[in-house]
Length: 303
Image 1 (tube, rainbow, N blue to C red):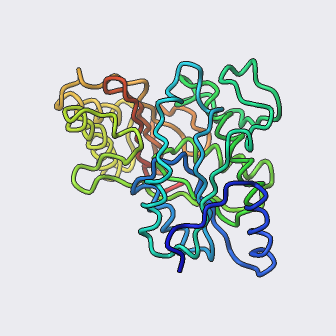
Image 2: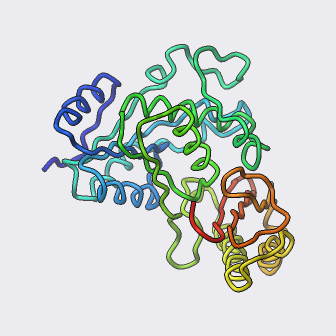
């Protein structure tokens, strides 16, 4: 068995490796990441390993999903530590880590100003403008573009995404359906801190100890909203949002600056005034100081 994961640092190496696997009829999964690997990413890889003969983990901080005012330069780049964490999974002969350069993925260059960008880009219209898209208007254009590139490079049978990024999951499922990608999207439940339930995120490292202590209040509110829905089998938008706000107020609302708390249809992401037995998604985005966090819970059947 290899002592470290096999690192493929070019598109040509990925395609050469995949060609043999395709000929042999091997099932392959893709776990796209931006690095700063944590237990949430590892749970995606572990899920993929159960389904697939081989798993490709991409590590690429994607410039096209950042705006000129966002934290691209601040985003952690920890390749050596990432490889060490993947190494601990102890099935390294089945794992390939794809680490392309920016010029590999964007041969025309990728200025952060969208008006200055050239080349092919992908948009999923109708699902990208709300929620995260309301404050980050080009975010899902960048996500859809880079994911499409990875699908074409790796040609996986399955691709794995975490429910924490619920809108991303819905956008990518629509992308795969509408563009006839020959693969299946698998959504893995959000990985959470086992003690207080905070959703695991690469951005959690930016929280101060005080902010980290307060942050789980949002999930406690989401959990209360889910309990309310499970008990009544229906609920109004205001009832559900009140569960979150009450939890935050108990913790101290001054610690939370919300971008949104939305109750959305699970397919269209349109805002709902009332949730019936078909369920919905409650999504939140908020800042604690300069650190922006997101979380959600799915009411009713999973997406």
